[in-house]
Image (cartoon, rainbow, N blue to C red; front, side, top):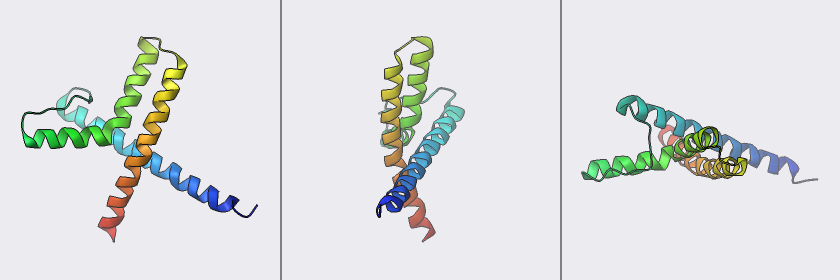
Length: 112
């Protein structure tokens, strides 16, 4: 098969970007929790323009971390079905792929 090595290379890039997105989400979520002493959530603060902007950016990039934390807690504490955890993982992985591509593009633009 002629196309197999190319597809494998593209899947490797997708996996790498997804991992970058998960790591960025985890770092941002943990940093937020370190500063505020409360876990990140999807609640947006609308006090000032700065808090609106920072809340939006935090939710956009820490979203996979928030989703997975809530899904794991729901599975462990509320005994939600395994399908719920699988669906949450798929959503978080897709989100991580998108945010990982953004992080990689920003990194490459700074380096270049």
